[in-house]
Image (cartoon, rainbow, N blue to C red; front, side, top):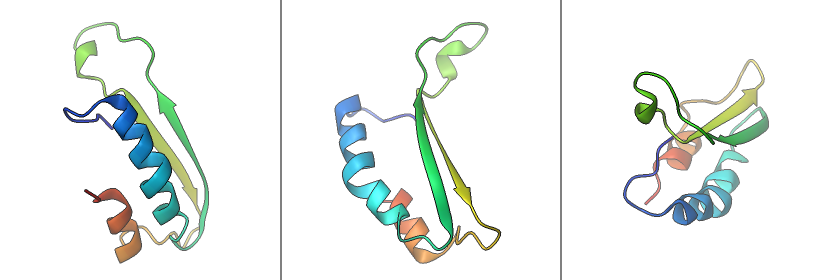
Length: 75
């Protein structure tokens, strides 16, 4: 994930106050982690997004259901 023109603090606020609560409603979500890139290097390193989020889901993971879509498409 790469926050647009908004400051990184806004991204963290969105993630903590909106995204996580909505993800918690996704069926069969087991866990989630968020990581921040600390250093870029190599060819095209500047193209690397500064955040990545990884979630663990059961087999019937609920991805694609309306609440999941809502959790990634908030203002």
